[in-house]
Image (cartoon, rainbow, N blue to C red; front, side, top):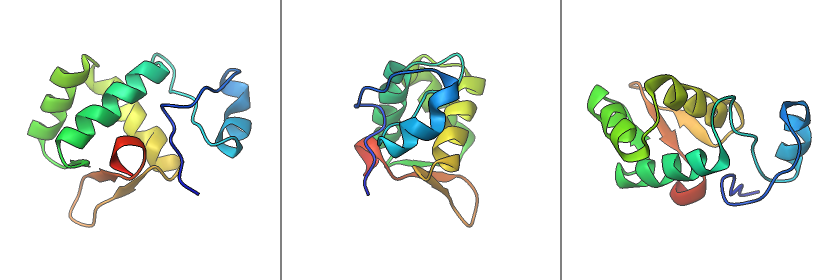
Length: 100
């Protein structure tokens, strides 16, 4: 099943995370919005969907306007829900949304 997390509408709050995942969308981490997820995915796409170096994260910060902790939280959410994978040499590869 391919999830297009940031582009689908999900109702409810944090208590409905499991239901949202079944519905094919993800609830953004606290302090972020679905629009932040869309900007994150678009910025990741510009980096070939791979975040490895400090420069990658700086580029993500500049393109999205998000703080480092917000990027870390969003990356963690994608990792925990199968929308990103850890790379053997370090970093992550986004596998959903604009990077699917």
